[in-house]
Image (tube, rainbow, N blue to C red; front, side, top):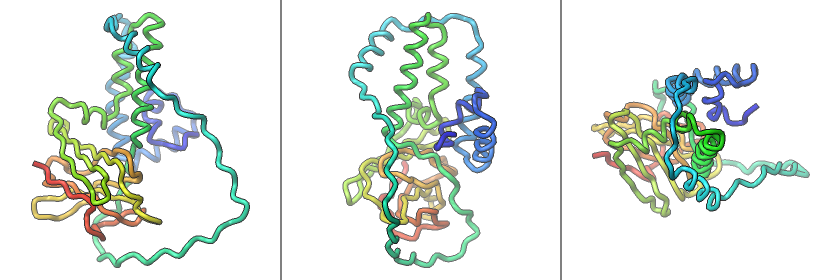
Length: 260
């Protein structure tokens, strides 16, 4: 069973999951808009895998792959952490500021991709292309399409626009939006630890200054597809909130980016 249900979109579309994994992923789909979009995107690509028309890879592909092999560091093996000898009492956590009751729903589960995993995902696409070149090179372009996530498509869109801000702690917050796709990606690097029981939460700001949750950023170095109406947003904010998220911001933004 995969620990990361977000990573099972491709296997779900290809009917390559066990019965237990499929059942868990179908439940997950009901609450994860990002994975639903990714599944819909991949379903449009999978019929191409059955085509028998040969496609010749670019002449430079083999050289590019061999060059990447020489310069790409492989992930180390996963080592289980040893069990703690004795349980340690948790330190008391200060109470959170009171938040006015709101009809706004709690933030939904968000697919956050650590930057290191983005590199691994790109390497997997390259390895798949290499395997098909060795085998004759017939459908490498289709495989490359199938491994491209919605976030990748936004980042690589021809009309992608980028806005960036630097936090007081020296971290970088970047927003990339594609108006053609009607979607935007939030990328963060080097953010400070939000603290025990806390996480970063993204917000879409409208022209009146009101904030609507755009999802939880659960890492200090990673990216996520922003939820909500990014086309109508005047800005994107990032605040420190309880790990479960807040219906409205409870702290001053660590970054607030105006979208032109």
